[in-house]
Image (cartoon, rainbow, N blue to C red; front, side):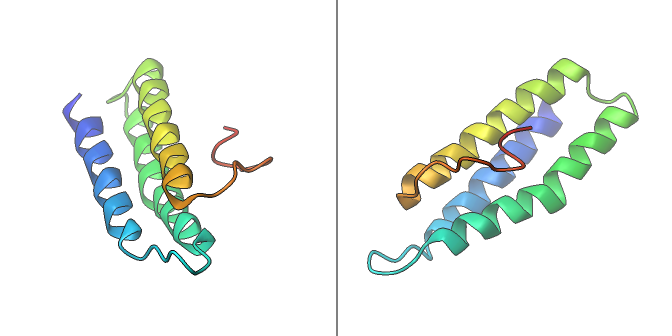
Length: 92
């Protein structure tokens, strides 16, 4: 679906942008936190609204959230961070 494809591309662009701040000798957890915060503030509510107005089905939302989870997991991997035991967004 075009809307979710465009949003997914936006998230990938954010990820690439945030990765430019990566430091081999520093703490990079803040990069991950900022990336997830952008998703929580801008993407999740928008997807919810598209669902509320029946523009997306429950299946569409589930598929898109799976893609988001993949981007979040990939960001953690690229930053060399351990998987969290309890993350609100990732456990949804």
